[in-house]
Image 1 (cartoon, one colour):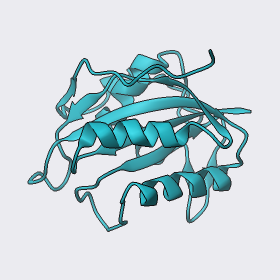
Image 2 (image 1 turned 120 degrees about the vertical axis):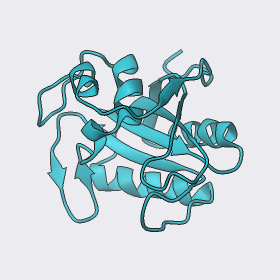
Image 3 (image 1 turned 30 degrees about the horizontal axis):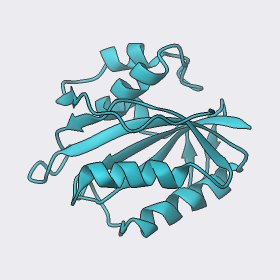
Image 4 (image 1 turned 90 degrees about the vertical axis):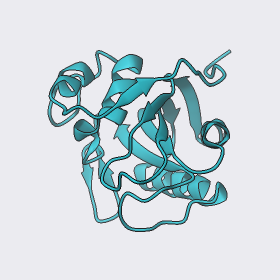
Length: 168
C-alpha cells in the first residue's frame, strides 16, 4: 500500500456537495481515505472573472498502481460532470494526484509529484495543515517551507470540514 495525496477543487454548482461526493467516491475500490484537510476558499488563478474555488487535500492509502489511480480519478471526475477543457476554466470538480509515496513519475499523461503543486498556495496550505512534516520527493522541502516561498494568493480557511474518514 502506498500513501497518496490528492488535491480537490471546485468552483461550479454546489461546491460543498461536489467535494463531499468526490471524497466519498475516492474512498473504496483500492483507495482508503485516511484524512481530509479543512476546506479553503480560494481566489481563481489566471482567469479572474470566475467564481471562487473550494479546495482541500486528501491523504489516502492505495493498492492501485499510478496509471490505475489516474484512471480512477478521471472516472470520478467524469461521473461528477467534469468536462476537460484547456486552461484555468471553471469546473465542477478537479482532482489532482499530488504525491504517490516517494515516487517520481514523468510520462505524457501523468506527472508525480504534481508538477505545479509547489507553486500553488491553494494546494500547499491544506497540505501543510494535513502533513506538515512531509517532504516533497524532488525538492526535499516541507509544505511550510514551500508555502513561505509563494506569492500572495488569497486562500481562506473556511472552518468547514468533511465528515471524518479513516479506519474505525
